Image (cartoon, rainbow, N blue to C red; front, side, top):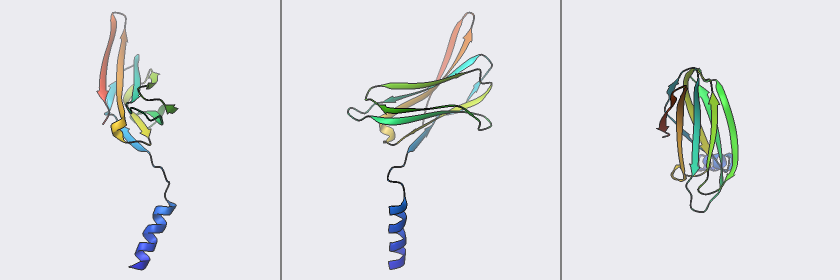
Amino acid sequence: MKRLIAALGFTLLASPAFAGLTVLSTAAASDEGNEVTCNATNVSPTKSFDIFITIFGQAGTEEGTQAFMAVAPGHTVALSEGMIVDNVRCVFEFSESSKLVRADMEVTQLTSIGDLSVVLPAS
């Protein structure tokens, strides 16, 4: 029993002190000429923290990624990519509780008669 406790203690000490949470959006189809935007808002009343956003295509290929450092309370950050002809998803990574982030994926179809957007909340 002492060995098990020692092994668990060592595992905890060797683990990173800060592990990120990940919020995934649902997948959405995107046709040629569409723009995909991943939005994340820090809804904490007082705390700034880092948010990492990545857009993936259906085959798991990384279409775009960006790190936003020290996002202030109440601020929104976004990553956009155009011309993705694929099913896409946004991945949001951050070190705080998921209660402090509101995230979504917006797919906008750009046409000559106007733009049509669909917004899918991340969960």
